[in-house]
Length: 106
Image 1 (cartoon, rainbow, N blue to C red):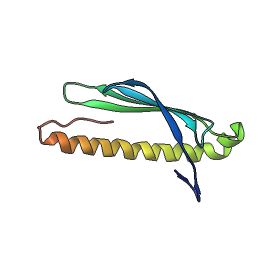
Image 2: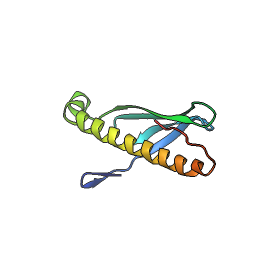
Image 3: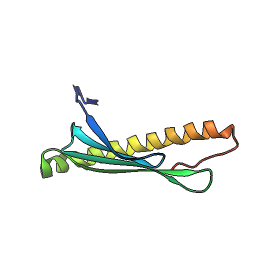
Image 4: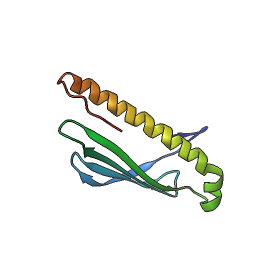
């Protein structure tokens, strides 16, 4: 992963896998003090689902890291997840439009 002019190794362990429903990424090594990301796919009706990302993290350097970098990380994460959710919605809409189904991804 690129972090400004630097390259940072970001390693995860996948946990709590439930087929078609959820999985978690737990940081083993990377830029955060702690990172726990749960991906959930929740059915909403016969032909749609809601995609939910729950992220719990701590920045390095404790209070100082949060004070100086918290706003930046929050902004970047919101942008990243907006993008990912849009890509997922477009992918499913394109695939399922051939079947006459238009799923919703929030």
